[in-house]
Amino acid sequence: MSEMLPDVLQILFALAAAAAVTALALAAYQGYLLIYQRYLAQLSGEGGLVAAGDGGGTFSALRGTVIAFLAAVNERWFPASWLERIELASRKAGRPLELKAAEIFALAELGALVSLSAGIFLSLLLGLSWASSILFLLLGALYPFVWLRDKVRARHHAITRALPYDLDLLTLSVEAGLDFAAALGKVVEKGRKGPLADELSITLKELKLGKTREEALRNLAVRVDLPTLTSFVQALLQADKMGTPLGKILRILSTQMRVDRTQRAEKLANEAPVKLLFPLIFFIFPTVFLIIFAPIIYQVFLGGNF
Image 1: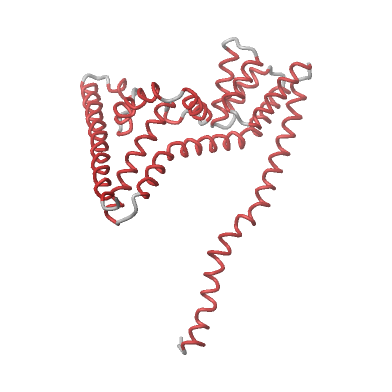
Image 2 (image 1 turned 60 degrees about the vertical axis):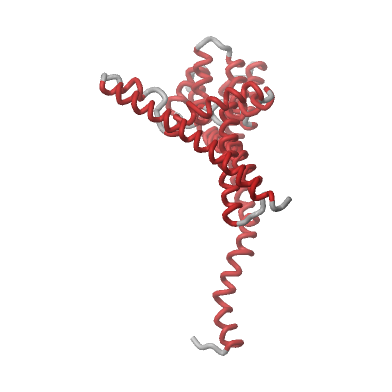
């Protein structure tokens, strides 16, 4: 059985390599078509219209061929609950690269294929166990989901950092006599650019289209799905129902947000020594001891001279 494993690995490597080469060939052909169409459009004076479209590039070519085909298959065969979960995560991440849930699964499948090819090649080259190929396959398949999770975390972190400043600006605008929609417009116009400004801009558009303040704020909380922002929205809705002046509740929320930010900074500062303990013990201390005691040990036990 063990003698058959290299033959099986070679067959798998050949199949995976053939699939990868086919995918790259299709992507290259699609890229050639995009470049040729752009060249013809520039000759006819319509280059701006083509440039405003897909944008070209290797990823666009790959997305228009292999990923599109795999995404169509995934939409038919993958459970709807899986697609909805990834779609929700993509929405919280701000839809990076405008990828749909089925396309993210397609990227995972392509990553698994490429990683399996690399794993089988290294297994045959270095004489590794066939289990290493499975490990490569899992890493390639999981990487798109890890990338999406990191995008969600980075976006939430950016929103958390921008929220106190934008809330202060919203409070000042309301206390200056503006209504909520006009104050929100000032925040979008004068506030820091980033994910929070983009989400507030969507909320402002919903208000201008006729949605109530409660509906627009609830949609904001659902889109971002961040506990800090959700509590802020709930406080505004509760104040609206109770008839509390908006400026007063915003001032209270602004003060509380500033206190929370200070406490969060103190918590991170207190966690720093604990996080530094591992690299300090296993990397810094051994290096220091080696620099200090290595010459002494060399002189005492080996009789060397410096």
